[in-house]
Image 1 (tube, rainbow, N blue to C red):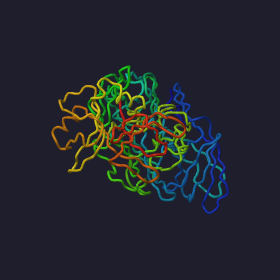
Image 2 (cartoon, rainbow, N blue to C red):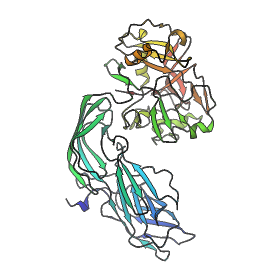
Image 3 (cartoon, rainbow, N blue to C red):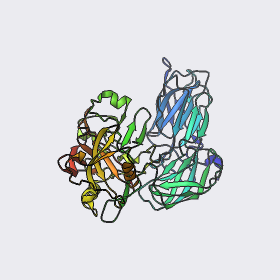
Image 4 (cartoon, rainbow, N blue to C red):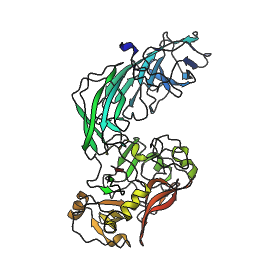
Length: 513
């Protein structure tokens, strides 16, 4: 196969586009193209456009605007084009590019590690002639700066995405000289859709590599050796990936909890889930007794925009899955805005499951997509009220940090090896008190003890009941307004089927299986 026919946009000619009247240097451009980008032809490697695809446009070394594809053509406005330069078109996989400023931005970068739902084709082309206010039409060709590669995957996990490691997954673009630079972000992860079989990935140029590692949830394995990856390359033969050895990802506690009668087991994360808007990263608290706000604070708008948050409305995973509000930092008091996949009757694990916070790459939890998930109401109930010896594997407790008690719920794993007499009465959080610096507490955590803080809940901008109530979302809906949640407080209140409005901000404790 000739390389010039490979991967997507190669030799995808744009028909002549009309440039509307030049007025105050704001120019409307229309480019006509054929096809649909996400219809990847894995026989030929051809990939073309679909509605919603975006081209960034640069001129004279800076970003000047963008064009969006709709019904067979690209259209949009560019501002301040210079007649001494061409128009430069960049397709960056429809990935979000932050802080683009017209007339100022001269570089940008994107990361292609999440490939579960689409293939982020990276390509570039320029107009055939320099921009001129006297010229009414332009043409261009986009050529790929990436490769399309097939993998043959065998994995024991059918739920979690298959993560390849050691790949170039970041591309840096310089609008000044139209250059592309490729590198690794983190471990060089690229996550493919779950399950076994033929899987395709977009890869960035890199040198030949020996066999490397791969993982999926609590399974680890290897990928075959990689040939040198060049721009516009198409590799249809298949590189073997086998993921079938039990392995705990980073951020997981060491002992399992059984969650149903079929014996399914999960491992809890090391702490509560947190989102940082300033860095656009998700992470776990580094300890089970830490949280962003430990006082009963009025969070205000600065909490959403300037600080990290761990009180999330239901389904606010950051993915645009169909809810009116899905951003983790947005607050509201209307439950109708928080329908998973836009449907009041769906759970987080319905659809493509991206309404679940665990679909995100957790920076200190493996940094790969679709590796964690939220427990269902039935699973929480099984842990609390059904599994063998459940009544002696749960207790109200407090962990003391700098002489201050931090109250919560203590859960012991299925296999518990430490001889210690707990008070299981579920009356007061001070019934069992442990010093965070004590040898006993270190032993308990090493043995798999889970501690769920009383983190309160958010309504609007206000977080209340910190240190008094524990509120954790489940992935199961009840009706159009309410969601099942885990709730506990003094006086013996402990239930997995507490009903709370979708708009409340609650804590999240993810698991991996």
